[in-house]
Image (tube, rainbow over all chains, first blue to last red; front, top):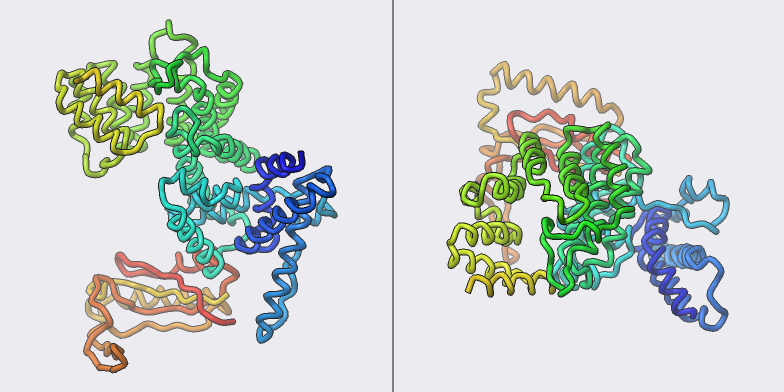
Length: 408
Length: 113
């Protein structure tokens, strides 16, 4: 019972508690250690005294005390430095008068973890750790790196934040543009990781919901940034389709073969609302067009309706005008194949810079499909084998093996 | 916090010091320096790498060499020492540093109070 209470508090509130501690003590290490200490005390006392009424508030309160103790011990050790007063409570905390409620500092923390001065490959991992409260092993599995490698990346990033003087405040309005872009890109990287595993059974899938929640939080707090609404729309549309991404036999289902009846309509509706706002605020932004692409798919109501390839191709043409990169061209080629035939699409894919797309799974997947449809079966098999070598999720693996079997 | 803003430019861009372009660049630095007011705690332009002498320590022995510590496309051409509340303010200041042609301004927090 009490173990369940601790697990529930941990699952639902750990990110919020760690973020609140980090904002209050202006130190990411202090926040992590204090939260771990509070969890250890909960594991010891809750089975004896029973779980507290508000588990999150209890953990936060105990962690604040643990952090203050740790800072005091540190000051005693470093007697030579003048006494530093304990950090003052944040404005949000003062407004609450007491610590019964955990202040929500996740947005502020997100901007710290995604500061342009933090190494790009550490931003998503640091955000998942400090803002979503995921453990190092969980994040390491999602990013396909070893735990020591990830731990080291996090240590370096935290050290940079502390030593370079990254402010624990929301950015000043004049630097919003660049900073928001880094936050949204990080959310997209984090979500892409959660999305790779179609069955949603792997370690990545657990935090897709967390990322979706963060995308909503951003729109609630930055009400005039169109691109934030666009990212929220994209994430909600993609998450809406999760139940249809694996068929009855456990095989990955490509987008055009997914049964729209299985899509979560409440998430599609939320996506629609976010997209509407994004279109009002930033109609030409690449993130808005990308969200519109997702919307075009989610507008399909049943498998009897033909897939919306023509509007999809038009949206890709529009996207190319604001963002011409190999990945956009690759995705566009999928629509070209349906509208103008596989030969035309294959010619476009073969014109792309293969080196820049090496190890990018969708590149091999798209090319393999087009090669097979153009009768170049041996080359198609080679691409499917390359895909299997990239260690796909279980549903993708079975789908690839079937494709390969069909070509033998 | 105190930060050093290290300016890396390609010396070849400067050409002759008597040129109007060079004089205008110096003018921009003077104006920038003025605009910093109390936030500027030090700094200077540096003579070119042709004037540099490097003392290298290897295996405990010190040897004297002609030239900079490394031959690079961009060279350290000058620096500012500034007082800023945090990295964001230092970045805002560094953005204003005049740079001749292409180049970089590296922001390094200084050790100590």
